Length: 201
Ligand SMILES: [Cu+2]
Image (cartoon, rainbow, N blue to C red; front, top):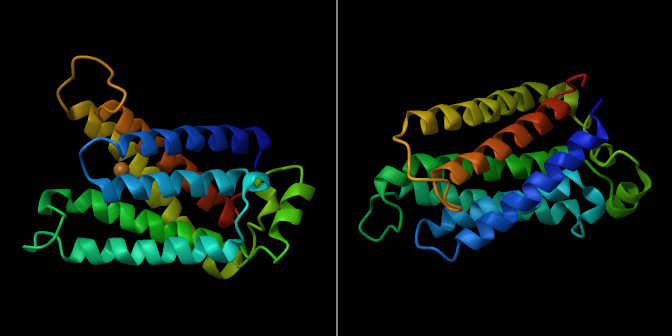
């Protein structure tokens, strides 16, 4: 079973990620992608620290589901004359779309009852407040596949960053910080999907 300190560490890391993503929205760049990172950061804090989550599960499912579909639509239209998405940014946007959809699936698969908040407060282990075993037997292959994808993406992000030329120093919104953001997201989502798949941790 999952250890409470791991959930706390991830909740803090995703909180920092969300704040960092919100601050980066002020800079020029792919805003929609930035927004997806912000939403995912907030959603993962809710996932790892359900006691802090004021929203019903259904709201999260609809929010991430619709946003994910919107992102998919932008990926399909990349490079079109009236599209805001350049073709070279399509890969990152596609990853954001998949991640957002995975968040919708994660909230859906939790199968938390209507009294979500009360359950969350009553449980000592934060992550356990969500019923990770819900649908685990039938949906386990999906969860395992997503876990492999996100853990792989974290590793790939580090590898890609190491292959880039070194920059002058660590910039707050530079490529190293962006890689750290992807590593937190990849590890956190990978861990969550392993739990959902019934991984005995
Ligand atoms: Cu990203």
